[in-house]
View 1 (cartoon, rainbow, N blue to C red):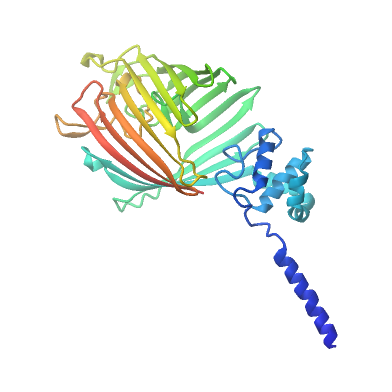
View 2 (view 1 turned 90 degrees about the vertical axis):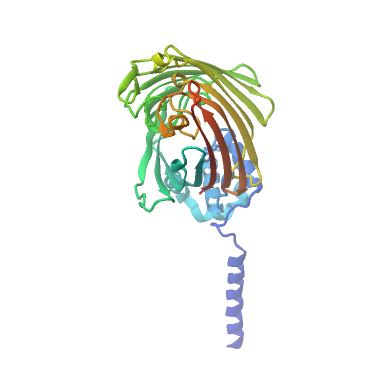
Length: 416
């Protein structure tokens, strides 16, 4: 009997040892593992789809279970992945014939998030200074092989009041897909035209059509929520943007915009306008890029005040922080000399439609003087998926130097 008990104990210990030695399918494949390079080659070859930024193992690590699903998908398409199959043989065996169904379900909807803690400190309009916590959830759902759905939920908490700020809203909701080689995006979406000196917005209601591979063209019509030269009107903006790489270092762009009525309060400054832009970009090396653009409108805003109708802007970028690379950093400097007619919704985070009038000591000026001044910024990846950023803005009105303000903007971002 004693020998039988010893034999049973030996079997149990062997089983426990075997379980301990087996790979846990829910542990991460470690950073730098050769498997990431192997599957990213499959992504580049078009055999499998990449994750968000186009590659796996970038913004976050994935588990052995997820890696096995990716390998199974590649095997189903006849790819030569013997080494990957051997590495994740146990996980593939555990998944069995169910793997294809699990892939379809797990790939169908993805939810990611971003948390931003920010401090806004104004020099002149001090009442606008505040601290806030903004939370965003991004939802991406696959409709079919050609179409997908995107959405963004957003909530912002102001630390300098006790109002609760409970509202959580769908700030974006759109569909995007390809139709006979034409990319179509429809709904409330993020929008940027060209370098963003004339029109860029976090959320707009728009229909956007993109075509071309070398010479790229974008046509759109949309309603912007926070126009620089209007008072929350529902007028539409129509536009056409062209971009062309002259060579490996130089890239050119041109655009035409047609805003509908522009308002000064409840008064129409002019019914319609036509705005034309031309721009060049120059890539000095892998780290340094210069953007410059000239903008000209047919009519100035409030012509009776002698406002200008042409301006320019430039920005120099150096490197850039990456969430998946702790210690990485970047910086930029930008200069603007743009009358109001050459701005619709500006790339700047400082609301250039609300600056301080030093002559009358009024805050939240809406004189549509445009902007003339500079901004600088730097960002740094503190830890994986954690980034810090700082920006400084120093503006005055392009057509009225009594209107001016400065702002320091400090941020800390977390993504998940």
